[in-house]
Amino acid sequence: MHIAPYNNENKAIVDVDHDLVPLNYFNIVKLKKGETFEYAVPGYETCIAPATGTVHVDVDGASYENLGTRTVDVWDGEPEGVYVPVGAKVRITCVSDTTETFIAGAKYDKVLEPFDVRADDLDIVQYGSDDTKTHRKIKHILGAHHHDKVGRLLVSELYTVGAGGWSGFPSHKHDTDRLPEETRHDETYNFRFKPNYGSGLQMLQREDGEPGDAYHIVDGSTVMIDKGYHPCAVLPGYEMYYFTILGGLSQRSLKQYFQPTHAEQLHTIPGIMDMVAKFK
Image (cartoon, rainbow, N blue to C red; front, top):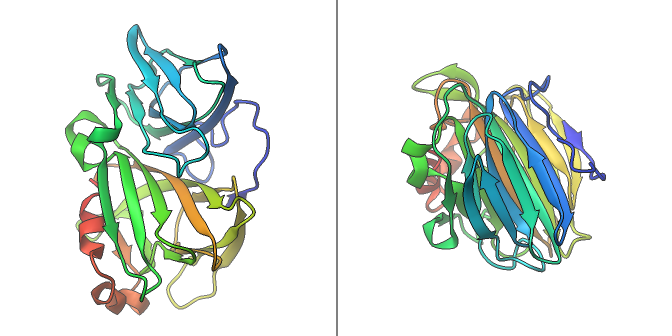
């Protein structure tokens, strides 16, 4: 499902127990200097990650100051984040002129400890190639480095390297718990383009060998992936970014099932298995 960009007025874009992606939560909070935003999400662990701007974060009395270093856009530096335990009371205070802050969440039933992730603690992987039109960099905010500190939530930023090309290919899905072949992980994206009038395409093929759906994605688009194979592409001449939320049903580690029709492409894309290994 595609949600076109709109002014959400700091209200959840993907709220708790959503019909399509009940394992996910997503909000975009926009503040001006000195403004605050408070929230608590019972039943969901969350991650605060400024897209731009700098904020102070208070999580049940634990303080994390000067989170976020980017000013212009999501290409302007490295991401940072704060992990928020299930149901914790949070206050976000804008200390820059403005901020646009992502709040990502996954359903979970245990209360863990909060912590922050700074730029030097990111888990970064680059894979693909210009020749295969799959060159991509992934910056894991909550990735393999924090496996033992988080319940079911994975949070990453994904960038196309260069202008144009494909992401999420070879086509894969993760909509059914049937280990060791596949895990059920609901997934939510928020897209950005550079320049911001760029756009792309999100495919969603429900069954191998059957026609699927396609959505025209623009700067600020949100896409929810409930089931099916889901590669996406950016138009030639533009760069694409998407903020990624994964919430697991039974475990945190993601096990992707690659579409049999295109599985041989796994052997043509450099570094793809290193990419797969980081979603833990």
